[in-house]
Image 1 (spheres, rainbow, N blue to C red):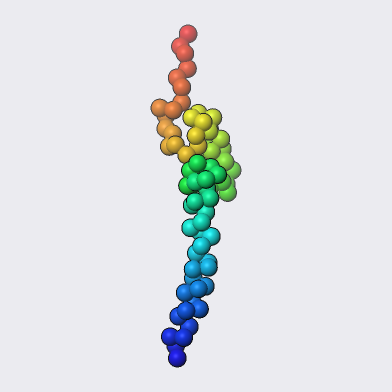
Image 2 (cartoon, one colour; image 1 turned 60 degrees about the horizontal axis):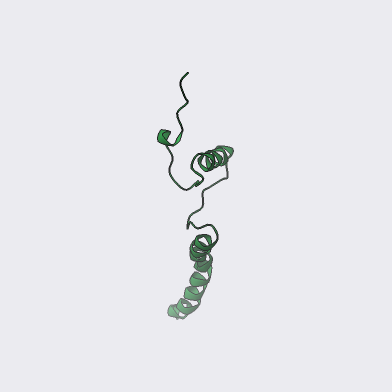
Length: 73
């Protein structure tokens, strides 16, 4: 009957979802942060480098307060 496919469908679903959820733990171990930033576009890579340069942690949201003021002469 139709319900005979349920065990094999569950196995396939679990097998395909394991890598997605395993990446959370692997990134937490290797990067110290569970999330990665998307760097597909050049603009995203530039913003990653900017955030890393300003705060040494690209995962912290940075605004104008993170940019040091220039000294006035």
